[in-house]
Length: 398
Image 1 (cartoon, one colour):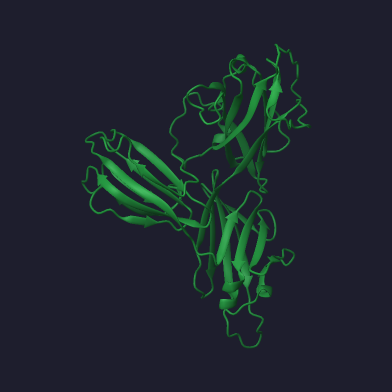
Image 2 (cartoon, one colour):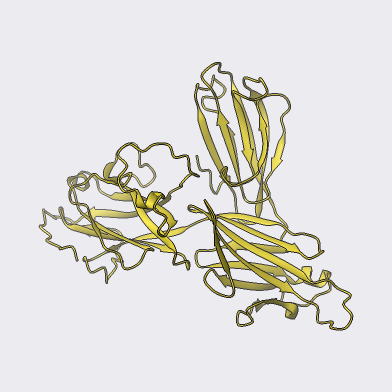
């Protein structure tokens, strides 16, 4: 369960305060505003103990597959945990034996240290250093640089601001099994040449991509007080309608009035300066309610499998683009407006073991690899043109 954006709320085990189910395995990803931290306090815990081997709660300092475990608990005191970033994960697990009341916890957000801040945006790293902080360390804004001298900061009355692209300004790209790491260093260097009374400051900036989640890290080294800034964000993907299979002219109208059986052309675009990523359309469903894609839906594509016979995939000009079409269907004639929700997956280009290269999964199995989260995009509304009958659109695949 993703609880992104809520500054304060409660989380609890399934059916709390009734008995939780056997063989449960639940995740709550708690994400608050950038440059804030999550504070999680447990208010009630009633579970099978036994050294927390069978039923337990795990709290992670970020995503569960790549972050430190802050604690595992099942009974006893009611602890409080504080994240080092704007994200925390709670995992609840039960076995097949006994069930109890479960747990209830409350989370809130508190401001992080604002001397230095970092945002991992779609096309660049946005790093900000406070001039008051520099002055307190004995430095001026003119002493803050990157190794690549062509990439200069914007200096305001209060801040030194760097917008550092992922594919330039000396940014280093590294890969391991489940992450892509983009890193750079902001240097604060004394102008004293013969005798140095101040130590240099290096602000190490790192944006780590775990599927569609960014982990943002900023810390100062070189014998100074370390500053740790951990932030998490999401990929930015947008979907647009186009008026033909040439995909030259996007449709600007909202709502988009169409005829029954008209071809609808859509393009999904991933905003990222990293060319080594690929976008995959996993699922697209239609619903008359933009806030409910469960109760009444029409499947166009699900788990990479085509469900609507008119669905066609088009060749894309680049890996950041996914293009497809389908025909307006009878579903739209029964409702005043129809919305589409598409779930898209971002993977490393040519990582043939990733979801993007697996195609149709008619019976998806639980993956042992780190979780591949999906980007959810809602587009619409689409409405049937007044008096619009069936239209035979013979748009060809180009």
